[in-house]
Length: 130
Image 1: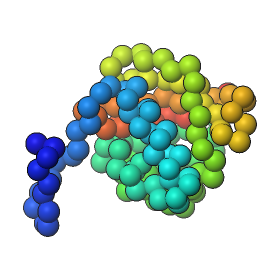
Image 2: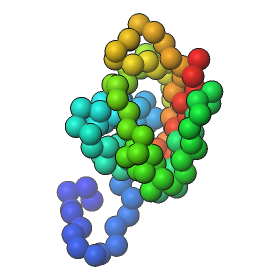
Image 3: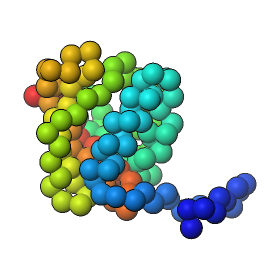
């Protein structure tokens, strides 16, 4: 029941978000860009499943496995530019791919971002440099 908030030390279940992988990607981009501006990536990291993963191809970083490691990566290696996506292709309800670039040079495509979701959370995010 999303209207009921559990406070204190009581056990909680993972958050369920409505919509499929394309909705997760839109939310990810929004929270990434807000994090760049504010320096706070907590809301973005909360999107990840507790066993979620961020992996890179053709980029020397990661992989970061588990929400704690993802949080550490965003804290220690904070992105400095806002993310821009285009050519969004929903492979199925749980997987989406898109071209990505940076706001400082939005006309230049940097690569592909692939987001795999599960029950409304990010299970795996793969960033590939073109």
